Image (cartoon, rainbow, N blue to C red; front, side, top):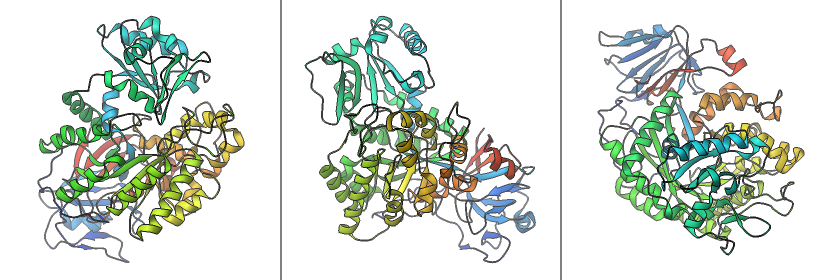
Length: 580
């Protein structure tokens, strides 16, 4: 268990740039023009020295080093071994890495950590590519579930079996005694069986709730599919996940994250359209504060809360500060503009080619979204808004531009979560307004075929996953997983951002949008840290910053750059080995 002796920090006011996660024990002095960088100290010896390594720092002032000295959980000095050798004392542990590549600890800029841990114990439908296997997995889960208990889980992607949307009738015969709710891979559509529909009183007479759709047959009968906030018709009947289950989920997901090299995650909680806004707050008090006080936190988290609860977050930060401990940082608030591409609820200027009467769904009414953004920003809270379709992204950019104009200039770092499909001119607006594009490269693998089928090849290629265009327009690009929608897997995301080759394809999708290796790593490190005001302490291997780093299996930067493939050998947080 990684644990730090430094006392938690508490602050009494909001900061546009948060204070340091740790008190820095020495003053920082970058040796400009010298072959090393260091944290000045006249007598302190390092706790740990890495040597004979290929260290990529994500810091442009010293891009590479071969040795790194660490003291009290922070980086003391980087450079050649001869430059750090005087910091080696009798108590110093030296680690000879034999030329292995070292990178900063990965920051997952967008995930749902407790959901990830919960889903690891539920029905897993990721990768299912045939209706028969879909039904079989659900039948097996029902067989192993006590009569009357819920069968929960998800990860299904109908595009993998040709596009047909599942129906309750597919699974009713194999789940006669259990209510079922299984979410699509994007979390914006769920399949209920007939037991669930009857339990929730959903019939041909039930009207669509605001921000959601009950999918029905041409005869008006519910098919079992519930889109976005229509889920709330079922959720009251599902037993609440116990505190113990959620705590176990956090530990389970944290272990997975460390195994994948993730040392920090920006956690958007268990909040989706149709879910209670209280879930994120319950997890904060029941799970995160418990884990922190009992020494069980393993990775650092930056927590975002539902935008509707902005005043509660504002009050909490005034009371406790934004930095609760070396492990927990209070980030900001999140809202929703639209749904998802796979569920045909991402909001576009033009209709879907396979549904000519449908342009998608606006989850939150524009005036409400504007007012919530305005009030959150006035309270100096960071704002993040989910937007996938081109019209949704344009709407969010319009809202952000208006709020910036009204409330005046400051370092606010507005975020767009996903920024997946952008109309012409949108990348330039991201750059001009200083808006952060928080994107997920692994979604590209799932959506390449889907986008082509739903938008048409020309439109999809013009506006989808425009990583290179955003960087060219000086926008800040932060990468994450959106786990459990996609796997926590930064190395996979880096490879995807570099190669853009979907499964079963033999060529890149829009090769002009491919990134270089260093650009992709920075999107998972220093840019992801910047996107959540964590860059004072995290995101690069720089003197004075926390010693969160990952040792990779490869000892060749050229091969890593050419193939984009490597594995995690070890993960360190605060200079202490956390995995394996």
